[in-house]
Image (cartoon, rainbow, N blue to C red; front, side):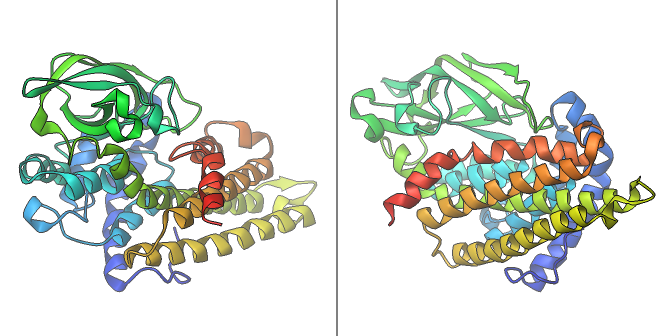
Length: 380
């Protein structure tokens, strides 16, 4: 269980909410972790249970069915989820999609989608990455061309979280390919729209319970009123939301790292070698001490970043630096945990192994860490 005694970013209200989150996970998530991992998807029942408990989109305003809370409540949901060892896509819905719709959506769009996102009846995805376009969103090739009062969308996306479960997709597309980034728009597509097809639930190295898919759009017709915000402003909207998205990855990183450390402590105290617990060897103690020191710094920095974000002061460069550091640190911690588990650390039945697998992508998504360094360098 995460230790809250050293935390500085949360209030008593956050801590009370955390108790609820833990109870829901204990009942609805933990008993089903292995099932979700094996099936490559979390059940819609889990989404509905989270919605009933107020854990979906807590920042959404009450007039759209939400609780009107701050990002700290999102962070609680994310921390406990990652500490539990789950990669369920509720964080994407809470921290990214809901923010886009509430910030840029029309009143009609907000009323149509947000209440059902809060309850878990509507599961969402955001389709950015393409087979030939990753961190460079200016290179998106999917098009949404006007035809009267409709857009006709053509293109493909890949590595899309919630791709199998989703009812609604925010599609990043070029409404005017001649304008580059200035021709990028965000288009809302309901999953039952003719011409939309889901591809494979992709076979990933980690995050097995997160359904991650290919999506295909073949002459998908949607009304021009499905444009999220203004046409041609999509790239600006994507850049505006980056600090929260990258902070969300930092939160996830810390939950994974802390659980990996806790698993290493537990295993080394129980495992006996050469007549004594592995924990008693100097190398083990030094390795665990190194891990704990990094976690101490990580939690302090995360709370600093959360408070900066709640005050509206976290910059893109700061969030990018944080994402790069936290994800790198988590990969170090999970690797150390696997090493301390010995041969058991390479067995999928151990939580340390799952955390190690899941941590690797943290250095890739949300913008690769190489891109993070480039963003930070521009602020120097």
